[in-house]
Image (tube, rainbow, N blue to C red):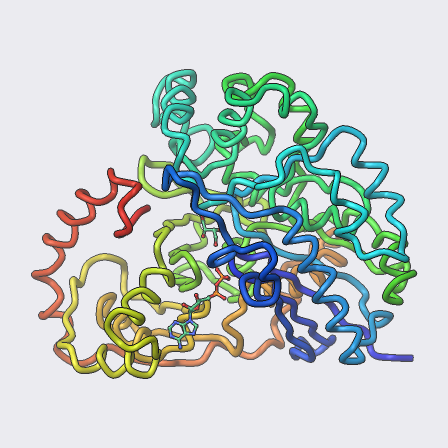
Length: 477
Ligand code: ADP
Ligand code: XUL
C-alpha cells in the first residue's frame, strides 16, 4: 500500500498552488497554475481585472475552477497517486467573495465525473467577477457600517477591525445596494477559502473563524456573526453565510467526483480551508514573540497574540491553529506588484539587476518599528536575499526563512494533518514538531540602524499622505 500523504492548496491572487507532504512532513510534490500565463483566455493581469474606476478589482470565479481542473490534470499526468491522500486543507486570498446562484448546491453535488468541473459549474455564479482584496470601491458602505455600529472603534472592538473597503461585509453591502436582484438570486456567499473547500466537498463549506474575521461581520470574541453588522450590510445575510466553524474542523469526505475522476480515496477528509495569511502562520510554525512577514502579491506582517486590543490600524483575527488566541495582521496592498514595477522601470525587468541595485544603495534603519525578535519571511519575494537584507536592516533583526516560500500551502498541508487529531486536543505545534526549523537567511548590516532612524519621520509623513488616496499606486494599507 502506498504511503499516506496530505495536500495543501493555496488559491492565491496570481496562481493556484499545491503541495503534498508525507507523514514525515517532507514536501514530496509541488505544482502551480499561473492564471495570466496558463489561462490566458480570462485575460487577467496579475490574476485580476482592475475596472475603469481604478477602485473596483475583481477576478473571474470560473478561472479559479478551471485552474483547479488544470492542476489536477497536471498532477495526474505526472503520475501523482491521489489514492494516498488521507486529508487536505487549503487557503484562499482573504476577503474575496463568491456568490452561488439559487439551485447551485445540486449542481455542485451531482457534477458528472466525465466533465471538467468548470463545465458543470459555469451557470452557478450570480456574480461572475468576484470582488477581491485589492478592491477599494466601498468607502460609502464602510462609513455606513461604522455609523450603524456606533463608530469605527466600536466596530473594531466587535469584529477586530474598523471598516475596511476590501472586507467582505462591505463588498456584500455594495452588491446588495447596486444590484438587489443579483443578491436575491444568491443562495450562498462563500469566501475564496470556503468556496475552494466547497469544490472539494461537493457541498457548501462553512466559513472558518479565522478567515471569517476578515469580513467586518464576525464577533471575534464570541465567534458568531454580529447581528447589527449583518443587518447593516444586507437583509437575509445570515442564511446566505451559513454557520462559521473552528478552523481545524473536519468538514467531511471528498466528493465522489474526485474519487471517480482522479482516484482519490472516498475516505479522504476535507479540513476547513482558511485565509492565506492564517495558513502561513501555520506553515511558518509561528510562536509567540516571532514576527512573520509575507512578501507575496500583498505584503503582510503578522504575529500570534494572546490578549489583543483592537485598534483603528490593522486587524485582529481569530488564530487559525488555536481557537483560544488571536493573530494580529497588517497588510500593505502593493507588495510584489510595486517591486515588479520598479524592477521593470529601473532594472530591465530582471530580479538580478534589481538585487544589484539594492545592494548598491546605502542601508539604514528606522529602528524602533517592532520589537527585536526574529523575523520569519515567506512569499515569492522571500527568494530574494537582497530584499531580505533590507528587511533585516530596517527592522534590525535576523531574518529566517523556511524551505518553501509557499508557506500558505505548507501550512494548509500541516492543518490537514492537525484537523485529523485536533479533537483529541493535539496542538499544531505537536503535529509539526519534526518539521525542519526555519533557517537563518540574513542578519542586520552593522551600522545600518543609525542610517534608517532619521527616515522614520519622513516615512510616517509619506504614509499618511498616500494612505488616504486609495487610487494612488503608492503604498496602500
Ligand atoms: P501570491 O501568493 O500572492 O500569488 P507569491 O507569494 O507566490 O504571491 O509571490 C509572487 C510574487 O513573488 C511575484 O509577483 C513576484 O513579484 C515575486 N517574486 C518572485 N521571485 C522574486 C525574486 N527573485 N525577487 C523578488 N520578487 C520575486
Ligand atoms: C490581507 C489581505 C491580503 C490577501 C491576499 O488582509 O488582504 O494579504 O489575503 O494575499
